[in-house]
Image (cartoon, rainbow over all chains, first blue to last red; front, side, top):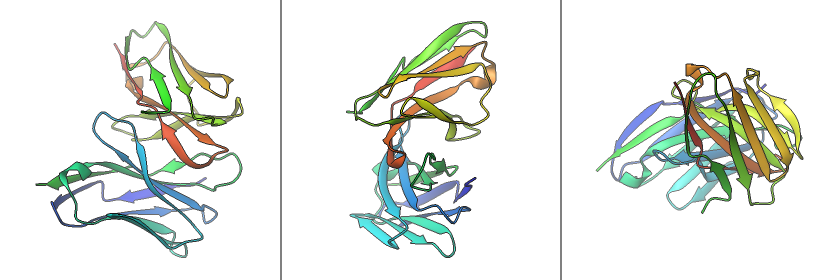
Length: 113
Length: 112
């Protein structure tokens, strides 16, 4: 089955700096890679996703890049703000058939004002 | 504003009690999931249902028993739980296992 590893487990940045979270996956058939943000006491919410037919996707201050050859994908947050502080989860799956997402172990991001 | 509603939000029970967690989705999805979230394993998949049929069971102990009577409702029946079962239980739904899963707010379960 799929195995997703996520690094770092914790990340502290100054407000305005960039943050990068990296994930690797094991199943070369995986073709859908979402990122979730979970604020303290709240449910995980999808913030951005990418499919394997593209290498990069941007949404305002958030971007995700995918390297299929190396089987890794990354989340980039620019101009970080205190409200970006949360736990971020990456995930991967084969987007056909009856398979569920495999999640990474999460990264706790702390943005210092 | 969530399309996935979980009840109760908090539950405290003894090890010999029987209780059920409920999840309802209003998004027209046809797949539903139960996850366990704890400090040890941040998002651990427990069960997957597609079109009311269980398609995945990640070696979950039999003291957890899922039920999916229709595509909008999912239950998790609890019986004779252990202290290590204390965790946040999250329900999610998606369409055809494709793309985004939408999560509920979870049930915070404490076993005494």
